[in-house]
Image (tube, rainbow, N blue to C red; front, side, top):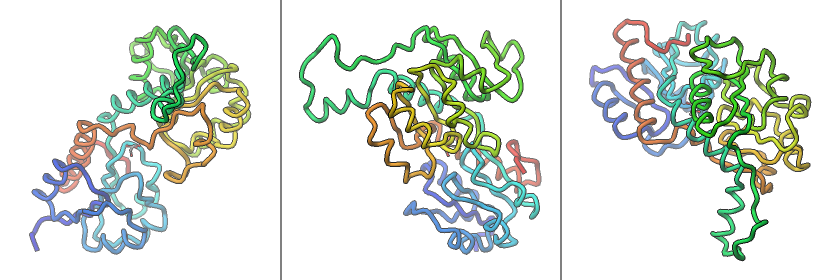
Length: 321
Ligand code: DGY
């Protein structure tokens, strides 16, 4: 017994984060990085004061109800918290935190990559190089869509959405947005507010999704809403797969209603709908929005700052429940 509080860490975290964890806690690290089953997670939490999960662990009502009494905190290594049932945690007086702010820049960078990758047919072009199928330069070959000067529609003008808006302005794009509430003038910074998603869609040459997955946003991009996008629009998703109805998006990509999609997140990761992979007009990434050295360290330290506060009997900065 080290005398330090025990903490279950469900996935392998960056070295600097694990070093701080082992310095300050009796850290139960996951060296193999194998994803635990719910049963294992419950069993391994026995005697632990806290769990540090990632979005890959589903802390459902049932899992939270079955956690040992020792567990007083869930400090997620993620900004998203759709994998944690907050009501169930509240019912057991378990404090829950996330890691906002620190991954906003990295996620917006990936959104720009997805936007450009989709607009400029990066997947097809890269494939030509790697498969030696590049015949020669041609004036009519691999023609994409120029995004400079186009309209971008941002769904969810929170931290990431606002940074995406700034990056889009760098491409002289006209920024439109839909958000639960309108931003003040300073934050809006000239962006055009739409009170409904329907109105936003009609004005989006590129639609970029930056809202969390909630019961309200699940399936928000569906047959009715996609029909409102201009023909040849581009859809970018770096938030959560659940916001998109896959059948609809795939049909719109197959029919040519949409020019392309750039996706970093999916329903049912990593077993995504295989039809996405069959399409040439998709630019697909494996949920790497926050995957930079700087950001992953910062996420870990933010989760640990929250845990330290809880252990000290203080209210953690990023308390969700
Ligand atoms: C987040 O932090 O929510 C990212 O999607 C990675 O989990």
